[in-house]
Image (cartoon, rainbow, N blue to C red; front, top):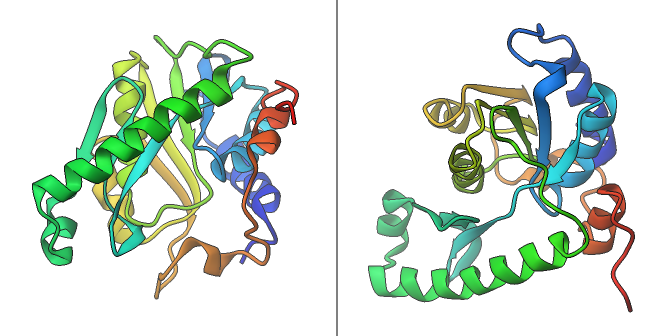
Length: 217
């Protein structure tokens, strides 16, 4: 469906460019990519819209036996999302959740320091936060990102992704002012199935796209 993240970003940017100014004001929009994979998509959108680009750092809380399956997420500013239904189905109790959360909280702090060590966060207060990822599977990470943007006093929160299940789009509507997704295929197993090239994005690539140079060797 998509050649790579840059292709997905350009196609998503075309959709966003057609949205009326009243819904997506260009002069007050900040594009926030979810690192790492969401940043190349967000870069294409920010370039097309002429908007500033930044990251919004959150971490998925994965089921221990199946880390790619999110049972929650955490974000900057002590934001915490718990998916009790996934926990119940996976047989994960509160103590095990807390153990994974503590590990991911440490990782989130390190990631934020690593990606923000060379620049200040773009302020979103009173602005439109356009949260971008390369795809949405369960929605826990994006939900946390929306709450982080709200906590940072964004006036409006919009979620944009190339691909996501229809059920997840509906579940995100209470936390976002608008959810824009290009495709909602059925069946939906994993985001990577909709990309020809879904290679991992490095921290150096994120920093390059943010205009922060690269990390030292």
